[in-house]
Structure formats: C-alpha cells, structure tokens
Amino acid sequence: MFGIGMGEFILILIVGLLLFGSRLPEVAYSLGKFVRKIQLSLQDIKSDIEDEIRK
Picture 1 (cartoon, rainbow, N blue to C red):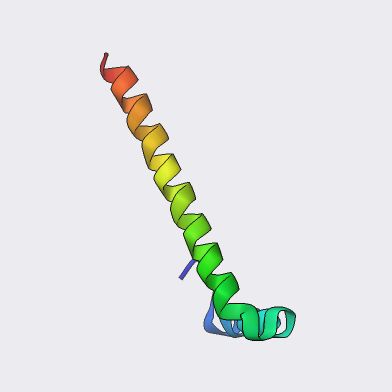
Picture 2 (picture 1 turned 60 degrees about the horizontal axis):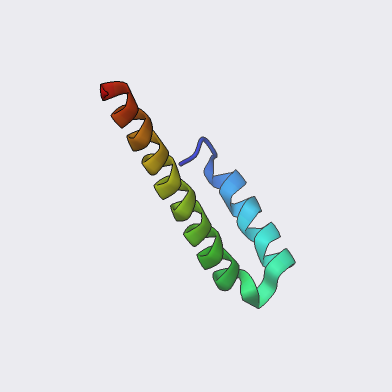
C-alpha cells in the first residue's frame, strides 16, 4: 500500500493519534475528500488534453 510497510503504517497512525487525538476521523475524512477532488481534477485535465490531441 503506497510503498510503505505495516510498521511504518502503524507509526504514522500513532503520530496521527498524538497530533489530532479525537479529531483524527474528521481529519482523515477531509483528507480523503481532498484527494478525491484532486483525482477528479486530474482526470478532467487528462480528458481535455486527449480531446485536444484528437482534434
């Protein structure tokens, strides 16, 4: 998963818990929405470029 091992994932989780505490689910949800928006934007850009190449 993303080139990280289980030990590294657990360490990231522990650091996240220490930094954000009870807000961690809220932060994770917001981060997920942000990543999804970026993915959709990149797909739109790719589609626009492919359309221009076809013309």
